[in-house]
Length: 324
Image (tube, rainbow, N blue to C red; front, side):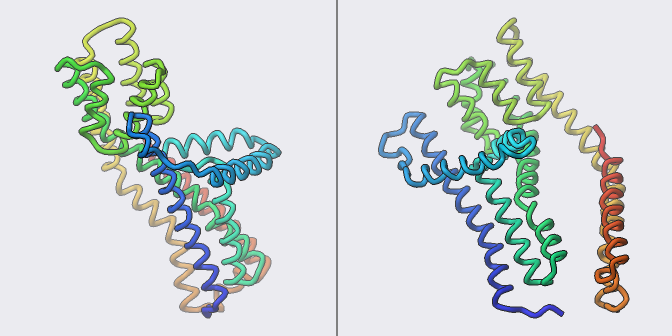
């Protein structure tokens, strides 16, 4: 049985402090970005964000140091670019270099926690591998949630734009109506489009940049249709209504597929968690029966093989239930 110690408590507090510091830093950057956007839209100079030269200099030095390290790694530049794109798509106010530092801090905190819990190198590696990728998992979760929310809002936004176009508004005036009437995340992305266009960027360029920030096939369809309409002419209101109806039908079909595969997904989840749950039950009922699995060399080899088989089996089961 594990006993609580001050060092263990300190490591747990350190781990949760990383969450708080990351959240506070991201909120601070979001507020500065919001104030900058307001100043670019014509707010009074007194409302512009303050200049933190020392903070900016520190961030630049950190970014340059991390980039020098990553440049020596294979595919380092590609990793930074991919991470930067994901942060933009998830609307997190981090740079790729800063998020890599945060991930490294989680690996260190996980290793420290594993050392204090087990005192063995295996425990250090295991806890580092479990807790280290937490920022990446969180980023993927937030990105998926934001993209799903955007897809749900897109048909209503296109319908609202179509009604505005019929009332005599232009394309970007209709997008301004959506920005005022709807909620994030679609209002944030449309606000970026309007801001970039007001700064002099070409209409097609800002629309394609929107498609790059939001990797969504329905949005790509709408952007392509709008660009073609601007080049060749046509009734923009009818085009937007048609695309909105198409997106709604695709979403309805996707919901039906999710309902039909719900039982299979629950079964796969239960089968994936069953070995872990059974191992915990045996450990608490009869510890000597399962401890050799972690202490004997053959037991460790079997444990690694079992974990690898479990991961591969789970991936295979969930992959079978994906419907494109």
